[in-house]
Image (cartoon, rainbow, N blue to C red; front, top):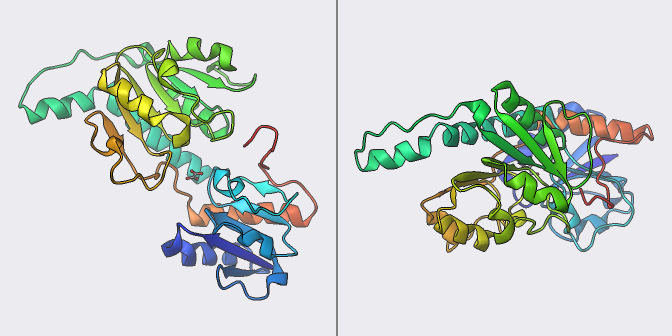
Length: 312
Ligand code: OXD
């Protein structure tokens, strides 16, 4: 029995992933693509942006597991073997990283750090009047495990948190929830700082274009740690130019790496980070992946499985 690790992105980390998985599953033979050995041995593929088409090479493949939270990098492969479970990664450490990243930017915008930076450049000593956290509404799009955990940590800091998702949800505690297209404008119009955690699906692609972004109040902020394709980048640039949105912290982009000639790089109100908001932690993620493989081996469902219906 063998596990194949395949990525076009994490090459320098593959040794770490491979030894992490090997430690978590000593009974398995862990191989790193392209050193796949006998293709008949491969039963599980653990992937991050794997080379397109390779997964059809393994006749005994039982499941595909993502090395990251999203699976759009898996399902975008036009040559995917039919009918195999695709398993997303929900890992405590990854969620924790995403919480810290979100808190960093919420506090940066909330406490006017972006303005003090500009003021310093022209040696201006202006004390901005501070807003209390309970008077600031953070709107989170995408209230799965990660979005909910980010929301709870902001509630602990006394922010008002509202959320939006495609379908109804319960058990969201103090997070006021909006759902479906009809409630999107009502949600956006109350949001001072928008955090996007939505996965990219057919339904979420370009869900935020100029008209939706205009519902955000003047002077609001955007933090995108979900997927780039969710916010139309040209529309974002033009609404940033008008000053309606004060600043955006973007970790994900429609095309990654962000092309050198993309105007987001040098827009004065944009902060670019290279998709680092929730880097998977090999030692903890390898254990989570190993637990899921063990469940599959026992004929039980791993968690969470990608659903074709919901698109994530
Ligand atoms: C992702 C990740 O899916 O970084 O984007 O885990």
